[in-house]
Image (cartoon, rainbow, N blue to C red; front, top):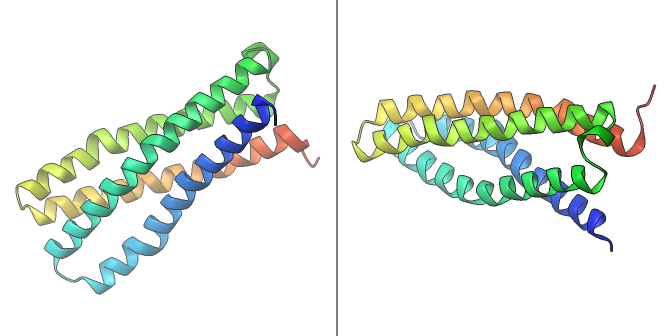
Length: 157
């Protein structure tokens, strides 16, 4: 296995962990918790622990995405050698990483502060903000992944 193949494998694995995790947490787990846990304190505490653990894994996945993504750019000869599909993937992927950093450093840390203050309604409000911004990342993931597929296999048209 050459370095490019290894980088592609790690890159795709990190995408599956990150985006798959967001889809599971935002699309399935958070709505189920909202229905099952009526008390905001229990819901906020559980969501905080889930988000904290999720972000711990996502730091590794995000680092792997940035290192392998930009590494593959340079293995291919730099930004000047990229196809349009590769450019779309790099730009949207970079924006997604920046949005994930914003989610961690703004609403998640606000949620942590609210949990530490036992301000459960504020913690739930920040959880809702995290979910909204994560949905934006899911929407951005579709053209990003599609452009990656097109970059490898060619556009269908």
